[in-house]
Length: 106
Image 1 (tube, rainbow, N blue to C red):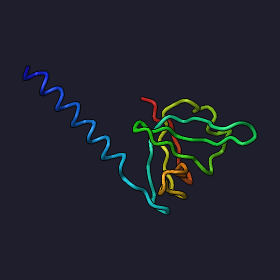
Image 2: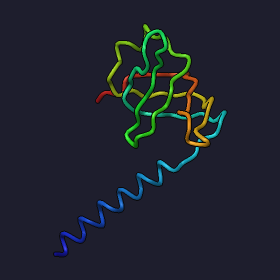
Image 3: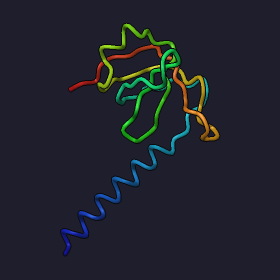
Image 4: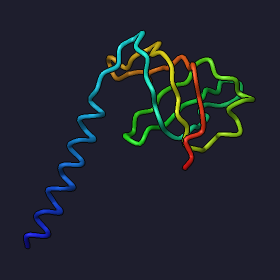
């Protein structure tokens, strides 16, 4: 019984930590480092690159060279850049003006 309670506390504690990390607000102009899976959204010719973080946040990536990032499609990547639009009212995806992008595959 003690093992089950300990496991439940551990799982709930980890979940609470994840929620706390998700609740962090980013402001426009702030430099951020984001890690997640690279994806392409939309229909041609209106496509845009996004990164899906492990916590479920989807960031739009602005200023990326499509030919350079296409080989990383579907892979884990590390993106650094400046927030150019924050998700203040939860109606639009946040946007990163990308400075750096590299593969984050193990």
